[in-house]
Amino acid sequence: MGGEFTTEQKRYLEGFVSGAKAVQATSMQVPRGAPAPAEPTGPDAASLKAMARFEAEGRKLTAEEKGKREELGLDSYDRMKKAAHEGTFPKGPDVFRWKFHGLFHVAPAQDSFMCRLRIPNGILTHWQFRGVADIAATHGGGYTDVTTRANLQIREIPATDGIDVLEKLVGLGLTAKGSGADNIRNVTGTPTAGIDRQELLDTRPLAREWHHYILNSRDMYGLPRKFNVAFDGAGVIGALEDTNDIGFQAVRVKDGFGVAPGVWLRLALGGITGHKDFARDTGVVVKPDEATEVSAAIVRVFIDTGDRTDRKKARLKYVLDALGFDGFLALVEQKLGRPLTRLPAEAVEPRAEADRLAHLGVHPQKQAGLSYIGVGLTVGRMSAAQMHGLADIAARFGDGDMRLTVWQNLLISGVPDARVEEACAAVEALGLSTRATPLQAGLVACTGSKGCRFAAADTKGTARAILAHCEARLALDGPVNIHVTGCHNSCAQHYIGDIGLIGARVPVNDDGDTVDGFHLLVGGGFGSEAAIARELYRDVKAEEAPVVVERLLKSWLDHRQDGEAFAHFTRRLDPDALKALVEAA
Image (tube, rainbow, N blue to C red; front, side):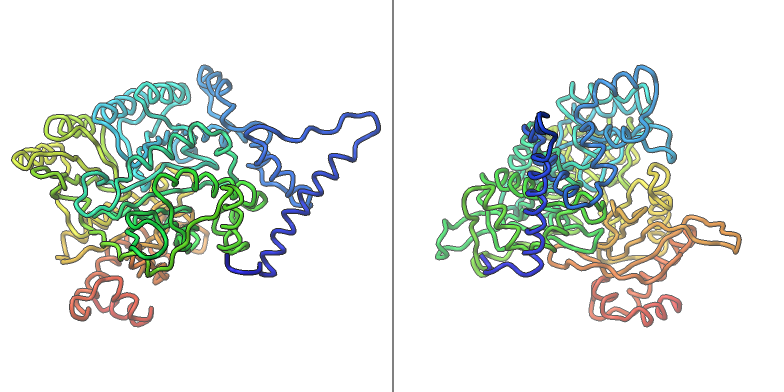
């Protein structure tokens, strides 16, 4: 370990211990003859004890914590069915509880439910995909959205139909359990897992194992806030694992460092780019078959130590900030009952770089004579009819798998090279594209104000307008990622975009009237180019955003040095100098 605890770490642990002692003392101070309060037992015990410790310290639990203690969302199903029969939406704490089953009441943006699925590694079969389309057509708005966690959302579900959606998903071998609220979200992995020519590891078994462990371990639903886990197999399409609370990165360990050489998983912790932090390398490596065990231990330490009094500070990052990585990992080792394996950086071979355009277009697989086709879905939306068509293409031309990506598109895999042209034509006939244009490849947008009550602007509409405007006027020769998010929850991860836009209400007069708008940031990145974008403009009206982005891109094309990438260009110039070039463009 890294030596003695720091003063801050000691204070954090002292509070943890003193809270536990206070709980114990309180349980002993009962009227003579009265039974002592029962010590929490069972799978909910750790979270209940954590709540009690904070209260014993004189701190006030958040409303969400109090609601979970009164009734954990997993236990609300009977009341959910009753509400569906009566045609009523949840109110008060039940809005939060219903999210444990994947149902989100998204009023006032839409007076309806949104259902978010769980799809480990983002891969489902063509018949499951078709089944989801049928559910969306029968019970929703007739479309789905691909999310930035390689997942699907069904929207515009009436109050009467939420349970029907959940039960029909189970009939397809799918589920929505734990896809919202304070839970471990959809498990992501390399979208080309098992077919990737440069991958070190097929992430599908790891993602599935962790997915099923979560579903079958009730204590995994006792978190103080949401939690993200990703597996990156070092393939051609990145999994953005460094934006997750736990990021596993496949690496090849060299001989001569005291462990078996070969493929291991490097452990990174604490990613939360909405709070301007990437997951950081811990120096720990994990055998692939130990990933679930280690993940569970990390989550259990988070359950014990995460803040339950301040939602903004209730993420793993803040536990790591308080305890330090060595202090946190010492607690993980206690849960595991054994030490973790640590290796110096030089023990690990450099990883191959991902290709920022590889999720669109035609690409050869490692299986001879087969290719996968990346299908572009502008900001992730598909109609039920398009989903039916894509399912037919996957079944007719490919291996039947539908592979979703964190870039809000999908891959059709296992297409014989001789049939690629025919398959691409079938995709185009659906009104979709397989072309990997520099802007289409990196355009990401969250749901926005048309479907989310937190968003300050229409993100998907603005993203489409930016794409149409700029592609008609500029000939880009390199990828540029544009991330459009509606609020500080940063579902579209605006801080890691070459250009990031975050929704804002922009004043238009002295009477307090506002319109949709954005603050614009530049210079973000991920992977080996990881960086947090910096703000360039505030209060850009949504209708003006396409022109501002066009001028920004044009200033790059006109003033870059020796093929300089957009992110490097914006990082090289100070904001005032960059603004001067943009305004002159």
